[in-house]
Length: 600
Image 1 (cartoon, rainbow, N blue to C red):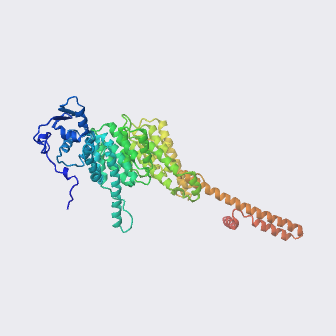
Image 2 (image 1 turned 90 degrees about the vertical axis):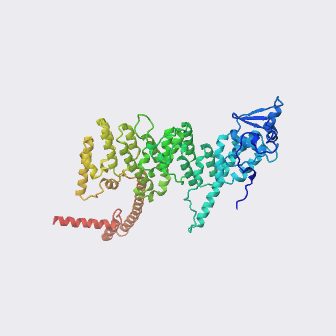
Image 3 (image 1 turned 90 degrees about the horizontal axis):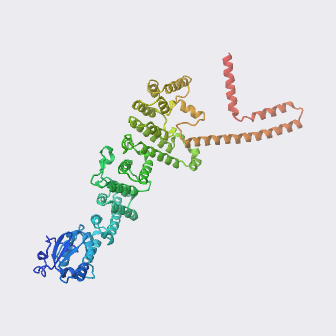
């Protein structure tokens, strides 16, 4: 059974003409109107008595008028316009109408303008509207959003009477309640005893109708009331993908479909983008899809956001750079006559990424964990290798652009360290594509570009291609042939098939495929081993000195016994095996035996 609405006296809709002669009021239905109220050019023929009895503003205007028989009154800038005044006039006449979420904000603001407080009539329009807001609107998230959206045309009055603040707080509180109830319901249905946080709240779509300043206040209030960060992120993503930003979900992922909304001012779009970026959660544990960030970055470049907003976006992307795809990096350039893709932005992303890696590899961490480092298997190095492969593909993608100058191309190559590439096949491929697309390069420019390729880090297939490539400088082909000869020589001599990488590591030279942190850890291990060996030598030297003292004492006590003297010397020499001990003796014996066999 549906309970009766507490506002049943207003809940019978009626078709309402604009003149009192048709109002359903027994007292004034047959009495001619004595005052005309003009609201935004629309006239209402009414009676003074019901109006002045409930409206303080109309009462004062009539009382202050020099004409005792005032017959016309104009109300300027009345909130809600003629339609809302018509409802207010009905209220003065006692005619039934329905208060709804669509008109309650208009009625409350118009009542404030008309001064329809309890000082002039008990339970006047201000009180009735406030009761409806308190008992109906703020109890529902959906109704609060609906009322808040109507306040956009009622500023600043809606702000002054507190409707905006009431609705913002109500949305945040109800969202928090909805989330708690949803979490508990999933807890009851989940045998694992854990809350299911993967569901998307229904109110995310409702909030997208709000304009950006109201939306910003709602998100801030949600954070205060404890709404989860992932829910707020989903809410921001949905808002960005609606028509409010002038870009749809498909366009934000596809730069070719990207265009500004012609119905929205560019300044308005810029404010929306800057506000959304400022609302992104700062918690690093919150997952934000890189594709979404790149979509916002493309839009930010299109509308010309401020530098702080753009740098914040680039910093956030840099912390997820190992997760992005090649399509994400292909940011279209907004500069007329420039290259096709925004190479400068990608360069800044790489700078931020390397700064992040450097921050994660603090010297204190190296001192604490240096001995346990596993060299090439460290987490940070794996990230750099992954980004290195991504950038190789990016270089090959932008290389055919005829407008891409050599400086921008080499800047991308130079920014990554040598250890970001284990092999240089991808880099060689990108450089070869660039040389083919830019035949006007001078010989010196070609030489400078090809020096970035480490011929020792080319595969057999790539080396064969270099040797037959007419676009490359002769010096590069000579280097490749030289290293191929060394590789063959090592293969015939039975050396390790890994080639120069293992050779450089074993010789003590830091590998190009090893990060600075791993090199540092390797050197510390070697230093530790050397210190231990020095300690062993000191102990053995001390033992030798003691033995020498015993020998001197034996010579003094028994100078005539030569056998004893020789025996002591023999024992002393046996204890000096600092670097080999008994094993060294065995190796020497084996070497002697092999020498005898050869002579035979």
